[in-house]
Image (tube, rainbow, N blue to C red; front, side, top):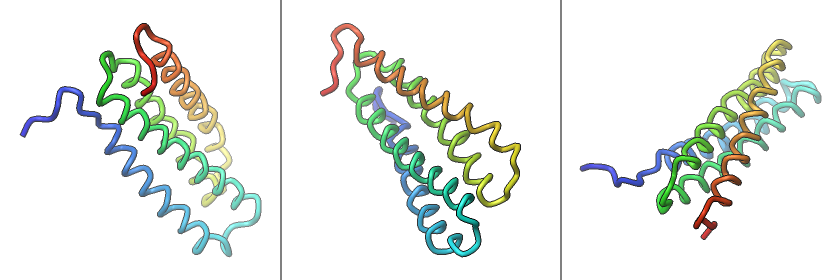
Length: 133
């Protein structure tokens, strides 16, 4: 069975990311709460919040991509959001549980990827003949 021409991998990435966000959020709330100091727990919770928000952003990209006449910018937005999840949330999860301070240097790269993703999504919405359904 061949995928549709507008098949979006971002729906699958969003679903997996959302699943992981719930699992890591629950793990943090139940297993890590007594293990981490308040500062580390705050870092972990920030990671979960951004993880959830950008899982939803990927879901939106995936849904828009399926019906898009010109999905190139949406594809770049999806990759930027995915990179942001790995770099931003991933580095914060690891920082919170390991205490390795150098991981904090990676986090801003993820933030830049999130900003790029939102910028690309905005650019797509402003393109000729395109509007958010």
